[in-house]
Structures are given as C-alpha cells and as structure tokens.
Length: 385
Image (tube, one colour):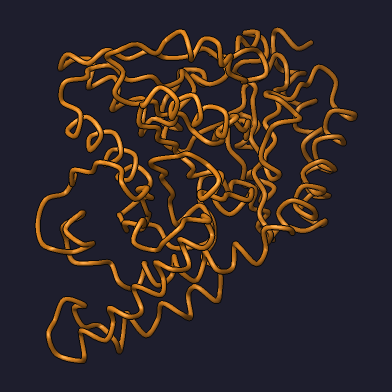
C-alpha cells in the first residue's frame, strides 16, 4: 500500500539531496570542527556555508545573525530566556492563546516565578486584533512573542505590522516561524523582527537541528552555557551532519518556494474544495485568505477526529488532528477552542499539511476514501444520524 503522507506540519521527509550531503559527515569527515588540526578544522568552513544558506533563505543581512540549535523548541526557549535575562527589570510578556506548546508551556512556567503574561485572543478565523496588542503593552513589557503562522490552522499573522508596533515602543519582538520558513517568502532585512526561530525537520532537513536568528544589535544572553561554539552564544559541540543538512534544505527551500505557493497550494485547494463539496456539515477552521499554502484544517460535525485518522491510516493515509506535540492529550485543540469553534465540530478536526513531494494521486486517494469514512462514522454516532 502506497503511503499518502499529509502531515508535513508535524515533520517532513529528509530530501534526498540533504541525505546525500549529510552522509560524508557521518562516515568520513567526522572530526570536531573546534580542532586545531586540518581533519577537524576544515569542517568549520562547511558549517559556515550552511549558515550562509540559512541566512539567505531568511533574507538576513549577514550569516553571523544565525545561531544553530537543536530544534525549534530550543530556539524559542533561547529567544525568550535571553530577552528576559537581558532586561531583568521588566517582567511582562505578550503572546497569544494559539502558540505552540514550546511557547505556551514556557510562559506558564514563567508565571509561576513571577512573570506576568498577556495571552492575546483570536477571532473565529484565528486572526488577531492588533488594537488588543497595542492596549496590552505597558512600561513593564520585555517581549512580544507571536508565531508567524499557526501549526494547526496555517493562519498567518501580520508579522510586519506586529514587529513595527514593537519597534516603535522599543520592545523586543520574537516570532516562532517554524511553520513559515520555506513555505512563504521571508525577508528579514525588511522586517523589524529581532528574534526568529526555525526547525530543520519542518523543511526536509533532519530532526535535531534548528536555528535562531538574532538581529545584529539585539541584546543576547546564552541559554546553553558551555564552550565557545556559535561565537560563545550556544555551548556544545556542533551537530555537524545535521547542520550541513539544514543548510542544503534551506537552499532547496529557496529554490522551490514558488512551487510551494503554486502547485502545492493548488493541491491543497483541490482537496479542500472537494471535501467541502462531498461531505455535508464540514467547515474549514481558520482564515482561508491569510494562511500557509500547504495547510487545511477541516472539521466534520458530530464525529471525532481520532476515529477519522485511524480509518484513514487503514487506507495508508497519514494526517493529524492538530499539533504532534499535543497528540497524546485527549483535550480538544487549544487553538480551535480559542477560535470559538462549536463543540459539535471541535472534536472532529483533521489537518492535512502537504509538501512538494505530494502529487495529484495523493489528493485523489483522500477524496476517494474520506467521504466514505465520515459517512460510516456518522452512521454509528448518536449525534450524526
């Protein structure tokens, strides 16, 4: 049975070119890049080339603004903790109710140690009210941290406007761009963003590598304290092979970003429109205008998303009901709850997130099987009959 993989917001396959670029650094060029001798020291040049590729994809002004990390969560934690340590006199953070657990869990912890957190609301399309943001800012605000695009719905926030609001008020602005990098164009030379997080495994690089962009001039305090690596900003021997892989993946993402916004978007729209037409009492969660080109989150009334996913899995189709980082929880999605989705639709959400490795046959498979699955589940549901 062919696997139809449509859970790319959870993780992506490693691109073949990325895998081939990594192999020598796992088998032949395994030296420590901090070594004085050539066998290890030569690897430093490869790491710097990877840094240049990441900076280029982000439209950063210089490669030195990129710090390699282990993942998006580390990048997020580093951004927040660095800002708080650099501004110890301020104890207020502004974020949103729909952030990834990497942000929300840290903010919940910070509340227990005396920080004040404002969680901004979203409307029924998952969009922010920027007037609420402006009203939340006060003299004690150290940081605004708002995601670039939501991992569950794909909704894109107006980062340029938010960053400008922060800049005018002299507040550090961080964005978790894990879902956006490689899917939509980003040019940090034109965005007043101070800190930006990304993760390799969301753009066809391996798991276990990420990056944090730190705008030149932004106060920074290391989160992982150790050796001199990353110019003293992140201790620990570099994960060389994965860093090389991330650099190659960023180069490929830059090359393929038009495909993400044309062919992949068209596949998503074809899937979405077909499901909405064929399945009654279904709805898209989130703005259909301001969102990632690869993502659709659809709710089917009166049934549970987990049951849909299990039956799709029997057909070789991999999708999800939301964030992979909360999939072990039985509570409804915090994102959909924040949007005020009706309880009859709340549990029945399915997220399809595509990549450039999907094709028309994948979409046809889902369109063939999902209406039958929903019909079957509604027939046995006490509410769906």
